[in-house]
Amino acid sequence: MLKHIAALTIAAGLFTAPALAQNAGHIAKAKAGKSCANCNLFQADLAYRDGSNMNLSGSRLRQSNLSLTTFDNANLSGANLSVANLFGARFNRANMTKANLSQVSAVGTYFGSSNMSGANLSGANLSGADLSLAQGLSQSQLNRACGDRSTRLPAGKTIPRCR
Image 1 (cartoon, rainbow, N blue to C red):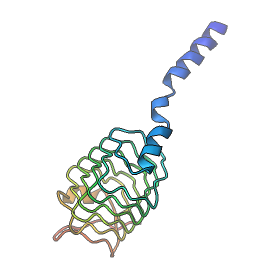
Image 2 (image 1 turned 60 degrees about the vertical axis):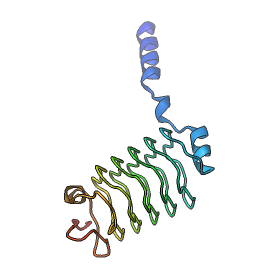
Image 3 (image 1 turned 30 degrees about the vertical axis):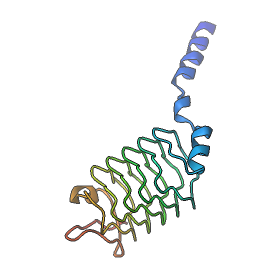
């Protein structure tokens, strides 16, 4: 019986994923405005910061607070921003190619001339967001998100209303 308990304890330890927890060193680097490609920034509070020109490509920003942050010319390609708070953030000319933006709250967010090619917008709340200049944004991406009357889109594009 003790062997079974010990085996289960060891197995549980192996399956808990320390790689998925926050990485304080990575978060400190990002808070200092330094590039951090492929970093683990899970649940990082980066609100009110200037992340312009940062390379966060491939980074895990899941459930992070990026509200009112500026990411002009930032590289977020392939980054996981799912369930993040992007309230009022600014992504002007950012590379968001293949970024995971599922379930984000991007209310009032400005996407400027950002490259949104292949970005996952499933369940994203884009109410009041400005995507009018966004590049590579397809109707099928927008069909998986929601917005409101004040959401600005490229000419000819529509978005379902949030409930």
